[in-house]
Image (cartoon, rainbow, N blue to C red; front, top):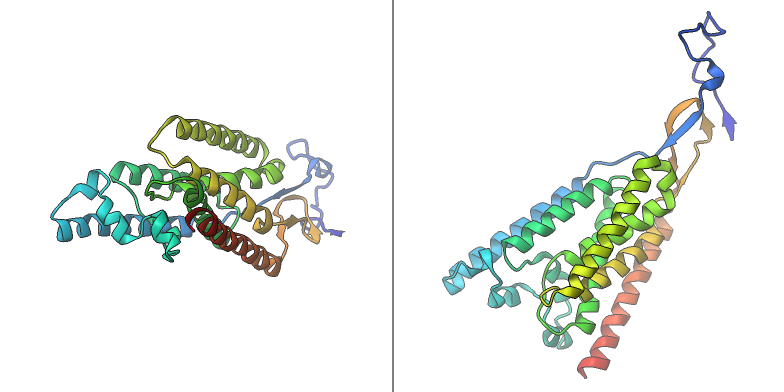
Amino acid sequence: MSWQPPGPPSSNYPPSPNRPPLGDARPQFYIKLSRPLVTQGLLGVILAVFVAQVLLGFFLFRSWTSLTNTNIDVLILMGAKVNPLIAQGEVWRLFTAIFLHGGVLHLLFNLYALYALGRSWKATGYIRFLTIFLVSGLYGSLLSYALSGPISVGASGAIFGLLGGITVFFLKYRDNFGVQGRAILQNMIVVLVLNLVIGFSSGFIDNWGHIGGLIGGALVTVGIMPRYRQPAIVRLGSQPLELADRRQMEVIWVIFCLILLAIGVYAVTVVRFQ
């Protein structure tokens, strides 16, 4: 690793009393952030799906129930997690259930949580963010399929996966974000514990879906979160850390997580429903 100063020495070097001496400067490394484009896209998709729910409920059943409450008929039609139907082969419901919501309050809560978490995930890149969201949602649906009987919908499992993933990420890189990183890590742990406690104390929350998403998010993040290294040329002052190219290993890890998911779906179907 080579070291390179920021430029030629100044003509009035050594520095004047009003200028800090060159020896006081230190290389400072930071992690570049990306724009939350995927977060905005997911918010738009989830909102559009909810509008479709409401309109479908009106045109097919002449009811606006989907706007404020759960319309089971509409949710089943659009792909809610229904255990017997999944066991009969409609495995796609594990995916579609992520984007459905049981009323406007359920929708707004998850939209806000996704928006807030998307701002904290800007360091990972949009492809990793989307991957963690989708894989977490699938793992949430899987554990709900395995351990929870009622029909369920919602992006909560995917959101818990983002919480689990960001906890793993900031646990590893908390020092690179200074006080802010350590504060985010502490807040994530508090939010996780509080939400799990609330989930177990309520009979209307699919807490197994939350736990499944949490496990899935942490699992996939371990393998695909960015790995950083110091630049080959280190300069005084602030400069971004270099991102190691691990795309092949990250793709392999995601495939591994999806294989585990498929094995889990098969095992649950055989053990519980056959």
